[in-house]
Length: 199
Image 1 (cartoon, rainbow, N blue to C red):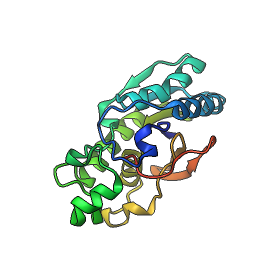
Image 2 (image 1 turned 180 degrees about the vertical axis):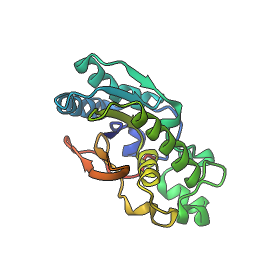
Image 3 (image 1 turned 90 degrees about the horizontal axis):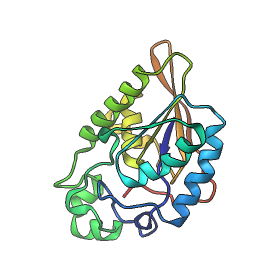
């Protein structure tokens, strides 16, 4: 299960967060508590998280409810956005029109590199999971979408076919007969989150 962190003030302001370590806002904390109560009923076996504060704070209520330890993995971090970090969508499109059109920060981490990094982390999590087990991975919007696209075998040209994850929403992947499948996408979106890329 791939779980996006709760809302931050930069999500509300539509700022590109990247690897800037922004905390959850009050709504994000409430979202994490609400979602954790639902996810705890699924009895996960493991919890993994990006080491950025907004992801760690989202994982914390689930760890408390389940008694599980959260394993931090820096490969689950959001895409590094370089000069885009802290800028709004409008500022990015105004200052970087060509790069903004493809959503690739000129001095940041390329899309393919993020897909490879996060996809590799997701495979490591899956490799350590017993048959029939459930791992919850707490990460970031773009990181999760790109990592999912990579392990689902989507080509770079169609990475965008997976829509954005709302704050504190999750997707579910399953492995059957050696093939990954997307079982759910953007589930569990209450209380109402802000939609968009994890900027």
